[in-house]
Image (cartoon, rainbow, N blue to C red):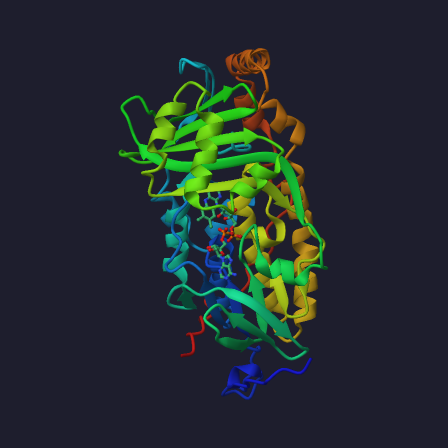
Length: 438
Ligand SMILES: Cc1cc2nc3c(=O)[nH]c(=O)nc-3n(C[C@H](O)[C@H](O)[C@H](O)COP(=O)(O)OP(=O)(O)OC[C@H]3O[C@@H](n4cnc5c(N)ncnc54)[C@H](O)[C@@H]3O)c2cc1C
């Protein structure tokens, strides 16, 4: 297909004062201003490219619950020079307790703060997603152009450019379109063969929201198992707020569809499923409607062999969502952005080589973090019967008494991303970021 051309000086390599040809500056459109989209903007802007981030939400989507950085994700943030900023916003979570219906801790696994080995269930780097989104935004907002309240609804491409169509009816031409549009990516749908299903389903659903903190909410995360494959978690991130999580094992069309329903319908669904769950279920259901934030999702992984087509490439969850159970959702997005930007910055004149390099370099890491989610273990942690819950609690209590999780963590050689190493930085240090064009 031949597209209407929109040539601009940044279409071509520029001759410098010394007469040397400078690397090509690409016009890159990033769909999605979440974690991966902003991390990509960070590195691409440092590579001298003109980056536009289009986010469908009307403002920076600095919301979400508590997330963690692990393994290569910590290094990715360090390479951006943002680890100090992250440290300044860490949530104080000392460990995880498995509690019974009366709230008594039967087993407790503390965070590994020894600086050795791997992280336990609680990472050394626990942070609210909103804080991390803001940190990334502060680090990129002067070097990339941000457009809020507009989504990328479609595109067409030829060998010279990709033309993106936006929700307000406007369109624009770019050298590259990146779909950093999350787990349900629309851009992924457009590049995958018709009817392809990229989801690997766990049969587990999750909802989380905030409730007022009460005196008994400590800095240890509580996990409670209820019969029927249900789990409730409580963790507190501020003097006034506590996070409530409901987790449900259910393979039904209703459960899979509810996440796309209006929030009120989602809340009815979760309240109905958990009303008789015991422990603090009543408290959490009561405050659901007043929460400033509510998120409901099916726990899936995105597994697809297709990460790019022509001038369109996927990043973050859109490409390789590993699910919250991997503990590497955020880290995966940061690492993937680092690798993709590195390949683009190395081959600005040869996008096919850059996108092939991205696939080759990142695939082993994506496979590693996805492969660590074991459906049998997930089923074990969401038992059906009271007897099975009793067994899991007794086994956890024994392991915790013998300090098994602690010792395993300290003596592990690798964290969750395995032996895979983050490649060199996408741009040499000291490279001057490109200013966005009006
Ligand atoms: C509001 C929110 C809350 C979250 N809370 C948690 C949490 O508490 N715990 C957790 O583990 N994970 C959470 N996640 C998921 C987590 O952020 C990701 O798993 C991970 O960070 C990978 O990031 P990502 O940038 O690939 O995707 P995301 O962080 O999901 O970001 C995708 C972004 O793309 C935008 N978008 C989608 N479609 C379009 C489009 N067509 N055009 C333009 N923009 C588009 C979305 O609004 C979103 O801002 C949350 C995600 C969101 C959006």
